[in-house]
Length: 248
Figure (cartoon, one colour):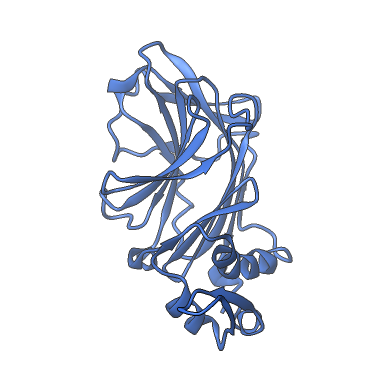
């Protein structure tokens, strides 16, 4: 990837009009261009596109089309009432059920997924207007308060990125997207303390976090803001590439 980065040109803001600077190497690029957070598409692509290009010639290290239950199970760090919140593998999808706002967020993790540098892809779908489909990204498996949550909201037709500090940013807002009718493809690229997020193949967010180097775990989840018990979210087509096997 360093060779790819060396030949990459990116735009940088200066006191003068925008200039184009050659990247000497990938480390220089990361340290001088990619921090702390941005939604600038050019910068996100400069980081992510070389990686996405690289994995095209590699099969995923983990695939789940939910034709059977491969091991996704309850993660007990969140508040959970199993009598009302549960999951079901059905119709080739992982389906999340919730009974209301006071029953907590149901999160499922997989015992084979604990990884440092990776590309993660999934199709997520909200099933009811008051439902949420959520992807948890734990940046430190030993710390329950170190995570990000990508939250797809049915009612507002947008996607939020929450942090463990209970703050969020809107990373996707498309009033024309029929979230209750269409799945959303979510891609995470995590490499050397940096994360970028793509929604439906569109770059939407980049962030730096030094805790990424400690190892990461991914959870799939959902809940609702209504008391009525309902199927609130579905997931399908999980694919994960271990970048430590692909990149130097």
